[in-house]
Length: 386
Ligand code: SAH
Image (cartoon, rainbow, N blue to C red; front, side, top):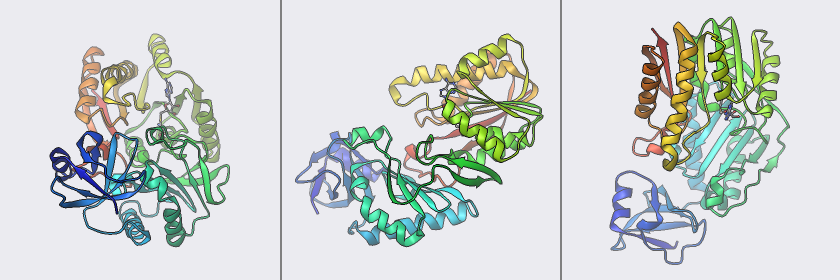
């Protein structure tokens, strides 16, 4: 195995429990080749761990193990078995769930979502891309999947110099996969849908939102209807809004598959649509805000926070006393404290008093590592308007 030598700062970073080493903390790359598993050593040559090496990314190393071990079929089998065992604890009886959540399962660069017999992979770095065949072989052995698709159309692959093409790796992936979540039917488009087809990370938040929801409900950024479908059973009427016609087509077929009558979808820019509802003095008892990640990086954090404030302000203007606001942020750069701060500002501006009902995060099949803040990305806070 080739060795990569770290600076003192790089070594400190690994010792703080973080698995990433940035280019500036690498002292010597030696003969390391794109996508290889390499030995990571300190300035004096002492072994620190085994990592996947990227020749192009600013994240040069992603730690796979702190043991001196081979990164082979047996290694991946062990990690995948451990990931599957964890799902049996945290997501039992779920037909659709995240089987591997990258760093959260000690497999940086790898995402695997399971939809019944179909597996959807995202190979996010050179190392996992190079390990594709051995991973596929392990997945065949462990799960005998009906089909495996790599949804490699994810922009981060650009930073790795990797192509952005989805590819069916094995078996067949139907145009639509029918799956169920929380007792509802979802038609997932594993080939082209947002994320890997369904927002699996909101599974537990859908149930939480439904517990508090009532009356007239508005689900902004509904995508394929996740929150809206769950709210329908508890509310008099539900309106779902999204700007993507493809997502709304899937939402509508989900509505029909569940024979839900009190739910309508509308294609609109949520910012404009909320403004229109405020002008029209419409009132709602429940509003859900689950926008895309406004802050894709730290550099546009201020603009992102203004965006969160604006939609929360408008939602609060629409909410009747006693109403429920479910507000989410999936930008990991926006910490919960920052989200609470902008909602507080929005509430003061809208002259509403909010009580926190629940502070939540991503579903437990998207595990969070204590020393890896990037593994916690989804915030979902439920408020009561007093
Ligand atoms: N709540 C959804 C996931 C939302 S993802 C669920 O649980 O399934 C964010 C969604 O916002 C995407 O569907 C995207 O199409 C939509 N979107 C992005 N910008 C938008 C805008 N300005 N107005 C309305 N929808 C928008």
